[in-house]
Image (cartoon, rainbow, N blue to C red):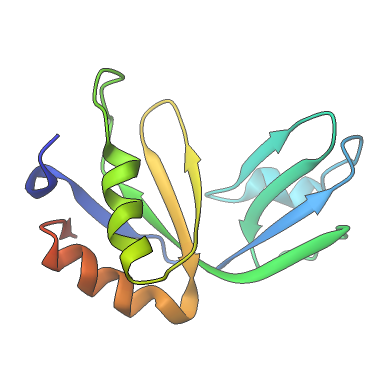
Length: 128
């Protein structure tokens, strides 16, 4: 897909990324959030949620902002994440990517948000 056709937005909240035990139970407040992501493997449970939630986790990393790719995106499209992360990597910005059925989300540290937006706009991405 052409870069100029992709529209990104920044979610309002600031997020934390948590590592929990694979058998951990989630606080009920998580399910009430507008955005959260939960991934489970045999080794861990990873949770991305608004940082204002009090989560008891083994490890956590706060201060993440989230870029959303306007969707829905067709499953036949290729290179969406690669294009965005390439631009951010050239700016030395670390990412945490999440994909859903309809679209992609890219978390970047809050202090890098302005640089990320500027670099992506220079590369032809649009923001709303």
